[in-house]
Length: 254
Image 1 (cartoon, rainbow, N blue to C red):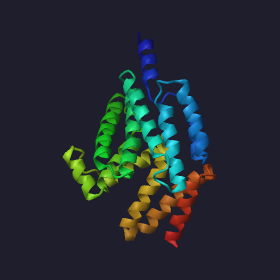
Image 2 (cartoon, helix red, strand yellow):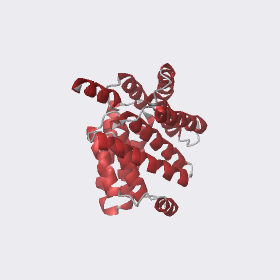
Image 3 (cartoon, rainbow, N blue to C red):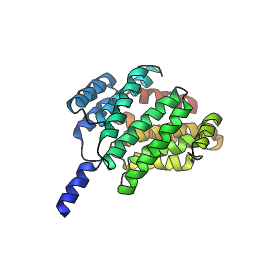
Image 4 (cartoon, rainbow, N blue to C red):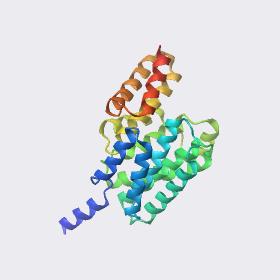
């Protein structure tokens, strides 16, 4: 019986080794956005119940849009993919894996909605994401990757516009904490699994934003941000998003 319970727990665990996902993510972070998108689309077609490759296909298009500096690039496709991922995750049997991938898809959709000015929808998705990750952590407190979404949630609420904070208050999201959000992001950047690269990138962006708010600590924060992205660039020298970040932050520091 104990062996059966252990096997069932393993099958439900969101961090079961997924070399197929890692291969696609390495391609994505290396700057091969169209190749990664096609790769994840193929994975998603092989298993029509798995939400993970659909989420990362959407992520590939999000990174591609960032590289093009065009927030509207493939917006409809990204939205459609995230809707599909949420449906797939929601149809899975209850457990940590279901909640993890559901939360991840909701987090990406919240990001997209916020980017395009839909504060109400972003706030609702953020709350649902927070609750789903909380369920995962109650079942498995070692889920470090969960703290990427929770870190963005805390930081985003703390630094949101007045309108976004009002919406958040109305639906019970609280006020957030930039300090806690950055701490969560540091944790994932250090010890994360599939989310480590993404967390490092988001952490660097948050540190740069904090630098703009803190003239006294600006040099230190920008130097730390450049260090994080410099490490990413050493590993993925072909990623134009990382390269542009280093150029822009370098100009600000000079």
